[in-house]
Every structure is written in structure tokens, then in C-alpha cells.
Image (cartoon, rainbow, N blue to C red):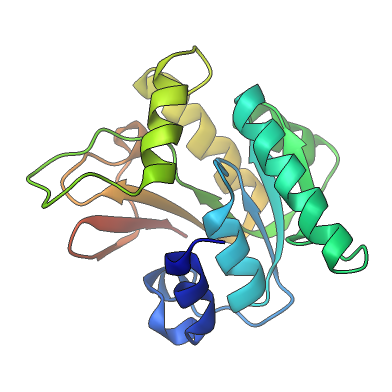
Length: 196
């Protein structure tokens, strides 16, 4: 874990904007992080918020790194799942569609697709985010390609989530798929769009 991630995990859940965006959930509720990347938000939701997190990552290389890290952490923890749920590879909307067809509902779906950075930044993103952005930009597996695909992902996520869907966006970017959220939680650089 990076020092920044260790600091995040040591803070109480109430200090994290994502916790508020999820509606300050009780421990033990279920969430699907459908665009997991390296799993940092999934780890935060699992370890700090006490949620049971299933993670989905589309890109084969990113998934391989995520799965390897999760297996290593599980071995250190005596076999306990690091996220509390499964680590799955696949295109998020298709995996969620499968959940719906199986009647597998979850309390929350969290989406943090790659989005273009807007506005002025004091510096570059953290190294893991730079790597993630470069890998995804170099292959057809990365960011959602069009508004129609974004809308489809959001639609199936809303069908699967019993409570809400939370989407992380840059502060000034348009909503996912052009669909206006029920509410927004705006921070300095990013915002969480909430679909009830």
C-alpha cells in the first residue's frame, strides 16, 4: 500500500466524501465497484467502511495486477477476501446484466470510469493513476467510448442497485451518459453524482 492509501485507511469513514455519497452505509452492506482499476476505492469501501465489495475490471492487464494483489493480500490474511466479495474480469455492463438476470441485487453500484481531466491542476495525478490512464489509453479496453455506452452502463447499474448508484466524475465534466443525477456532492477537484 502507498503511504497515501495507508493514511486514507487509517481515517474514520466519516472523513471520506465517498462514504457520504453512499449515504453513510451500515457495515455489511454490499457494493459492486464496477470499474475497479487498481482497487483503491474498493479497498477503502471494504476496509474503512466495512462493506462487502465485489470488484469488476475490464482491462486484462489491470485485472491481472488487481487479482494478483488481492490473492497476495488474502494469503497474508489467512484466506479472507481482501474486498469481502469476488474479483471479476469483464465489461461492467455485461457483468451487471448477468447479475440482474440471476436476480443478484446489491445495495450499491459504484462507478469511477476514466474521465478526461478538466481545469487547472497543480501537478500530475499520483503515479498509479498515470499508469492506469496510460494503459487504458493504449488499448480498446479503457474509458467508455461514447455516451450511449455510458447510458447503458448507468441503466443496468440502476437496475442492480437496491439503494443507489454513485458515479465519480471530475468536478466540471458532464454527467455519465448525459443523465442528470438525483443529487451531487461536489469537492475541490471531483464530484460524486448520485442516482437514487
